[in-house]
Length: 85
Image 1 (cartoon, rainbow, N blue to C red):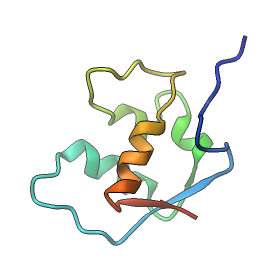
Image 2 (image 1 turned 60 degrees about the horizontal axis):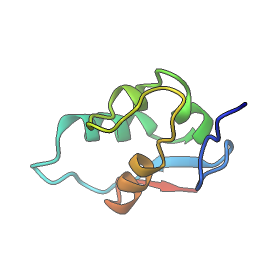
Image 3 (image 1 turned 90 degrees about the horizontal axis):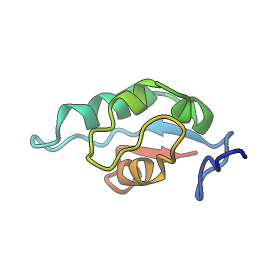
Image 4 (image 1 turned 60 degrees about the vertical axis):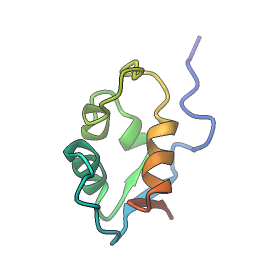
């Protein structure tokens, strides 16, 4: 059985890094993973096993490759660091 990739995003959804500045207390892994998105990455690229984005998810409940990363992408969107185009 194939695991569902996302409840919120499609494989071809595209994201870009915004011009939003980081607050001085933002931790490095949040900065580097959103900077990696840069001028555009698809959800498939972000979701890919061992993607740079995945390597920079640092939370206790992160289950690794093959599991949804919706909450992390939504966190970055909520803070204005990335946006879906």
